[in-house]
Image (cartoon, rainbow, N blue to C red):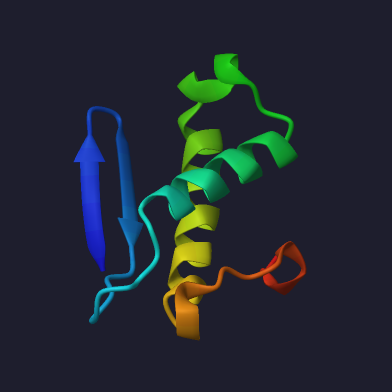
Length: 81
């Protein structure tokens, strides 16, 4: 588990034992997808709970993606609620 702290915020994520072929853009794209699906806007970026929730969902997607041949991300229907 890797953890980071920046100012008021901290986040932990599972560490991968092997590199994944997924682009760094993939987790960023999923963060934005979850952000928009939740109905959040730019003004909400100051709410660390909302940011953390979107980051954690993106981390789950990155973890699933790295377990798949070809680094194929999951569909929304495959993700935990």
